[in-house]
Amino acid sequence: MAKKIIVIGAGPGGLAAAMLLASKGYKVDVYEKQSFVGGRNGSVTMDGYTFDIGPTFLSMPEIAEELFEASGRNLHDYMDLQELSMMYELIFKDRKVRMFKDPKKLSDEIERHYPGNAEGYTRFMNDTRKKMERLKPILQSPMDRYYQYISWKVLRALPQLSLGKSLYSVLSDYFTEHELRLAFTFQSKYLGMSPWECPGAFSILSFMEHEYGIFHPIGGLNQLSKSMAKVVGEHGGSIHLGQGVKKLWIEDRNVVKGIMTEDGEKIAADEVIINGDFAHVMSNLVDDGVLKKYSKEKLKKKKYSCSTFMIYLGMDKQFDLPHHSIVFAEDYKKNVEEITETYTLPEDPSIYIQNASVTDPTLAPPGHSTLYILAPVPNNVSGIDWQRNEQTFKELVLDAVESKAGLENIRDHIQVEKIISPHHWEVDFNIYEGATFNLGHQLTQMMALRPHNRFEELENCWLVGGGTHPGSGLPTILESARITTNMLMNEDPSYSFNKEQPMEEAL
Image (cartoon, rainbow, N blue to C red):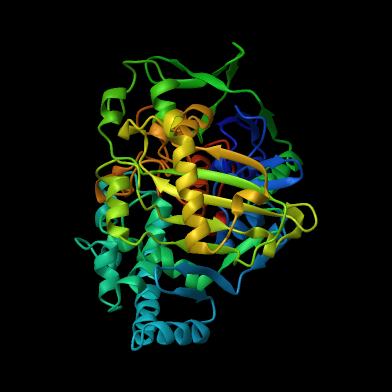
């Protein structure tokens, strides 16, 4: 008889795990507090305008393709992926630099702005390709035992890990110009970290974009979560929206027997997979005194990512702006320090703008467009009163968008508006301290030092998502689901799983 699996949270990690397990015959039930699937990978719709809530593009689509294939489905039957030939435009004080997927076009652009640096780009790509080959086995396998640090795959990868070097330092080996180094290190913001603090191994982030491209699904990246939810249903799994989980049902001190819903229902399960924000779940769904390694007191001492201030605007016109733009603060290092060290409101914020309507006409009424504006800000450890500062900071961001990105009189064209501040991330989305990208990715909180996929403090309990190995970011979150479901099936005596078959082939 197939085991019963409960998944807490219908974010992309939980949905990917549910999809894989349901396709293998497990009885899967997903419980989601919100009225929609996807969590931060969900969507907001207002008066005919559709916005992705969080991530806005798909990188390394082959991971999603492999997960759908393992579930007996073809990703492209569910989503229309459009690759962006010009991935994004970087807006500095005195220039705009267009980052192309095509190496020849990008080399020409680099030489036009930063003569003599195209050679560094070619060298960076060649070197990081080797780094990626060595790191992939680590990113695709469990890392929940310290002895795994001396495994062959880790030892082979050690020379490529850039241990002791920051991401910015690694890129300084390739580029002479500060702006160009930022062009290949700003991706550390995907982890909510500073390029001067982020481990050098994460040079793979910008490499992944340039090597594999970035893609926009028509309808928004939320289509990935909606597609996985559809496959879960096709394989007999159930997704219970608007049904939050109040507590884990725990007996004998640490044995998880199921869940207790916010409606007071007690539901049994053989295994529980947690896709909620890790620190929030362990602080709120587990009674005090049960956890030792991840008690409330110890969670408070962990390092967390920054947060994000979000503005979603439905506009009555279309703009001459690329699909993705990044506006850099004039003093980027100071801006990063405000966000990650001094925990103060940025005076000159860096800003990401998505103008997806240039690619996707389905997101807004004819002749209209959507603007998605994100400014990295400190998490709620800062003590910033966002209810008092929200409007002031919004105006500061819009002023910067007008002056630096050239969107004049932007306020005159706003039809609908929504703001998500760090306060909203914490209160409405149950994100610990509003730290949008989860636990930080310092070396002290990576691999075996991150909460394990098979959660080490509770029996019958598993983790997926950014709070476990291999970490935050959509591709790695999907990878966490593959690692966790592989482990669960490997340890399941009732599942006729060929133990000799390599894990990558088995799923």
